[in-house]
Image (cartoon, rainbow, N blue to C red; front, top):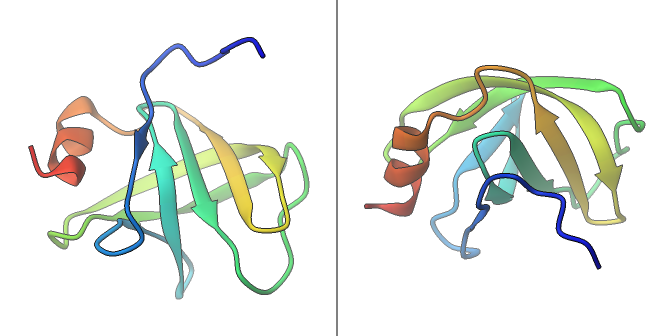
Length: 99
């Protein structure tokens, strides 16, 4: 398989992971990078491919970052987004990792 990512992706454990809020509904973040975010879906409908999703990335510290992206793929349990600029700043990724 060819790796298409241009930025490193940070994976999170099940406990203590950031949350992606869409409206008032929280979704656990599985992994993210400066330009991408993948979140878990356990119920409800998935967004369609290429649709835009807007929400808030909430770090375990409580810090919140607004993000918006287009759906690049979905599975029965997750949705992957390619984020619009400015994406997730490197310092926010470092904070999410606790570094």
